[in-house]
Length: 166
Image (cartoon, rainbow, N blue to C red; front, side, top):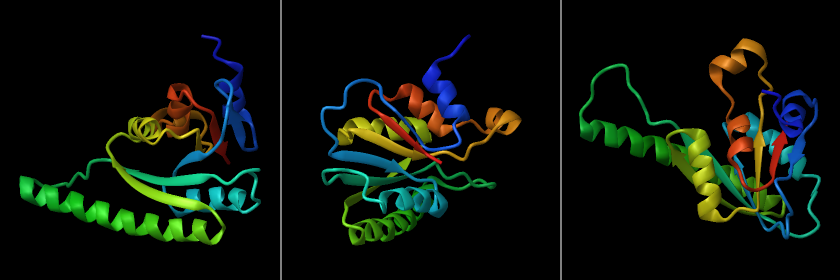
């Protein structure tokens, strides 16, 4: 019922927040899930300062929920829609990866489908990322309750440091 200090800090800090879950022996891989161009620009603004002593590899990620249509479609149409969404999203990620390369970072990209928090955690484990760098929209009150918070869920589920960029 009382919560944790790191949780409250993450909720109320007006600045970006780095939460450590334990020692960080090295920082070589960062998972950077973005919701869109705005999230990417916030992260890129921070990364432009070249904040890391040693080079890091950044894996960009966008997670799309399973595409839903307002009308019934066949299984084949559903598969085509999913393939279209993945291809379009991969193009977006590739252009963001080029921007990171131009900033001097090694970058890869990955498109996830499904629940964003779950997909991020799954990719963090598969990629063996040393840290997750994620944006936060800073929703408060009822909108946060109704819409949920991916950064909040990731913070509580991750076993690695989480850097929340505001």
